[in-house]
Image 1 (cartoon, rainbow, N blue to C red):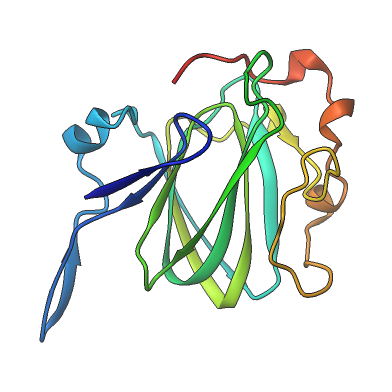
Image 2 (spheres, one colour; image 1 turned 90 degrees about the vertical axis):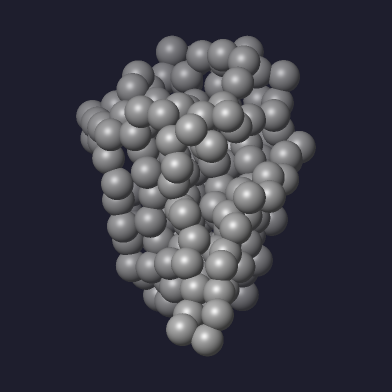
Length: 187
């Protein structure tokens, strides 16, 4: 497996080894010991899948308390996936990392606990899947504005994205009370 470190320590792009022949291909999408060697927690408690069509943007979401680390990937289609460091006290506070994930490139993105996460469907559609280190606690979820000018995510958009009401009404990072932001812990 090939691991690409990003500008924010702890956020990783993972390219699993893919073995193919005339029958198709095979890859390990999770192996506890190999991923633990990368600093990814071995305890995953929930798997999620989402299907969306082009132009749909989901995010940016984080839970506090009960932050979730997420190992994300696309089974079919393509997305632009983003992790934003909103851990109070972090040297990278307010910075973001983006990566194209697709069924074709089979890349994964490790989004550590304490990062806001979201993605934009850039292909015709996408089947998105992710493993989480904590359960979903909707009462603790914070929605960060997808277009917060202080963060400046460079979404590859043609026009306006399709958003849920929750995402349309996301807060600016500067307006989120400090106690609603996860604490920085070195990863």
